[in-house]
Amino acid sequence: MPERLRGLVITNLFPSNVDPGFAPFNRQQFSALGRLADVEVLGVVPWRYGRYFGKGKTKDVVDEEIIEGLRVRHPRYTPIPGLSGLNAGLLFAALLPDLARRRKSFDVILGSYAYPDGCAAVLLGQALRCPVVVKCHGSDLNRVTGDHAARLQMRKLLPRASRVIVVSRRLGAAAEELGVDRDRVRLIYNGVDRERFWPMPREEARKKLVLPPDVEVVVYVGLLAEHKGARDLLAAIPRLHERRKNVLTVFVGDGPLLPEVADYVEHRAAASGAAMAVGRVRHDEVPVWMAAANVLCVPSWDEGMPNVVREAHAIGRPVVATRVGGLPEAVFSEVLGRLVEPHDPGALAEGLALELAAAAKKTPEEIRRVAVVPSWEESAREVLAVLEEAVGGSGAHSGF
Image (cartoon, rainbow, N blue to C red; front, side):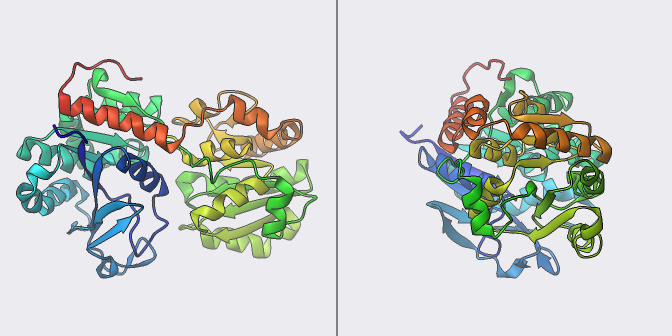
């Protein structure tokens, strides 16, 4: 093996010229990894009719670009609508000819997202006699497994990976349920950009955003979708308003429920509880919205380990989250916030009311001291160790 490991990343979760703000967690982790090893990213793009990730057309994505020092290629593959169970095989077939020609240029393949990326990576590893590591994020094991064909393929292929990286203990258990040997599972938390997410004074953040200084602010950051609990938070606002009159709930992000959120803001907010629909913002603007908050809300129905929780804690803000996935691993102390049951707007409203009262007695320094907030450099070093372990074929040990 050369002095610097040579890794090939295969993932559909990566930015492009069409959507530079997409999947910032992978961009940050793999750019940090690229400072420790030679990394090439295949940011695969499925051919789709119409818009690509809501931003542009598939044909507008460049074939190759440099992103934060990484060489990023954007190979296409053609999924068949309604037959998602074929996607891993189609992705494998699309990538194999080029990678077979370039086999000597990489030592290990990292498939980031279990299906189809991770499963296709395992097939490529078998064909090219190359070790493979699969990184699981959350929805791939929590939601994609609901597709019978995809689940069968994950059960068949994921156990063949040299190692499987998970971002929470709960995902490690889910990987085991799919047949992955526990000794091959490695728990690696995603990191946080500590230079960007720091305890900016709340007054300064609100001045930048032109928010009133004398209200309590609850901020939601993420995809506005039902399974992310966005509708539950909408339903919780009037109940929260009954308990605490001076609360503003801010939705930062876009998604299928954005029209519903905007409709509430326009027609009901004045009587039922103040709200704002900000839409999607650049990643470097997210810390300002978090710093302006009294509390961050994560009302998801399922999760791996959402980075917004780590980012809020890095800024020194408590979190009200649902008791699902890896969230209990992040909100493990009352200093860091509180957990409520999912699918329950009433419990969510009560949790937010209690935490808003408690947050007034907490300091950012106290929250940062208690929280587990690794940097991206620390996270990348752990990923590198797993890749080297896979290449070396070293003996496994329990990782979570």
